[in-house]
Image (cartoon, rainbow, N blue to C red):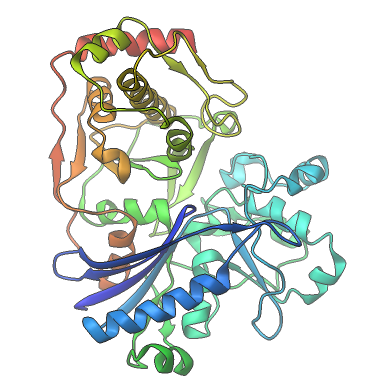
Amino acid sequence: MKHIAVLDVGKTNAKLALVEGASLREIAVVTRPNTVRPGPPYPHFDLAGHWAFFLTHLAAFQAAHGVDAISVTTHGASIVLLDETGALAAPMLDYEHPGPDALAPAYDSLRPPFAATGSARLPLGLNVGAQLHWLLQDKDLARRTAHILTYPGYWGWRLTGVMSCDVTSLGCHTDLWEPASARFSPLVETLGLTAKMAPARKPAEVLGTISAEVAQATGLPPSTPVSVGIHDSNASLYPYILGRAAPFAVVSTGTWVVAMAIGGAPVALDPARDGLVNVNALGQPVPSARFMGGREYELLREGCTPPQPQDRAAVLAGIMLLPAVEPGSGPFPGHQMRWTAPPATGGQRMLAVSWYLALMTQTCLGLIGARGPVIVEGPFARNPDYLDMLAALCPFGVEIATSATGTSTGAALLALGSGAAPATTPVRPPADAPALAGYAARWRDTT
């Protein structure tokens, strides 16, 4: 496997990356915005536009480099409904649509307990079961729906003509899966969907080879294999699962910041604080907690500038951002953000926001009993102020990947079948770590 093409669909952007098998380096990347279409019938994703984009650039990658395999990774909380012909039975609902909340009491009476699914009750469409319950009130849609696929499974279907549900997406707070027993939850039968759910498969399995139509459109060999695919946070975790001894924790950062503990201390997860059980690429339960950190950063970044030394002193003296910027999820649900004192400069604002994000991350790590080094993946690994605060608070150290890793690399490893854990670089605790620890203690006391 010299080159693996990865369809990588995040909540903000859709990406096609070509990963070199030997180095796990992205040698070509193209992106397009994952813009939500307003409807009708409801806010939904542009699957047709993504598909045309993927085919165009798969052809370009094949012509320029050659493609030996394809893998898929996508954001979670998403499901695709197909009719008997394999066409969309309905557009793919944006999970941030409030529609399912209108039926919340009725859905709550149907969903299995947290102890069985590890799935916290979340607002909007963040529980896929709630999406399905709401969508299928349309009796015509319920009649037309013949197949239900997880989001990676949908792209696998478009590529190969074979249907599947990857277990990592099923284990992403859907209410549809029981992580401990590795089977569909009773909700599937309750909703009358037992015969409609595509088979559950592990991400690294070969789903099939590309269809004749895809081969013709892209120039790829018809024998090109396609992996089942994986939920994006679990793609970030997968390289370390393959090659690193427990205990450790991985913090996957993007639109969502997801903390996942491997070999952590036994804890009782609190679904009211967005504690949940994810399912990793091997099908194993993983204690997790998360908040919408990337979205919060985007909402707060206006007016931010690189902090100066005098900004650090001012923020340490008492400028704090308290949770939660996105109050619908995360460890402080229902809390409304506030500043203890308004930042006087863009640098103070940037520093306080970065420390807030680190403190939210550290809260999540505590909720899941994380032990061992904390490995930060994604955009926040490039934020030195975020890393400073986290390194001051994590007794077993913080590490970042030496080379670019993340979702595309983890998905590429599905096709490779094995791999060493990525090299990491320790983050040196800052000289003022005691002062940062004191700031963190005051922040916790104030929240």
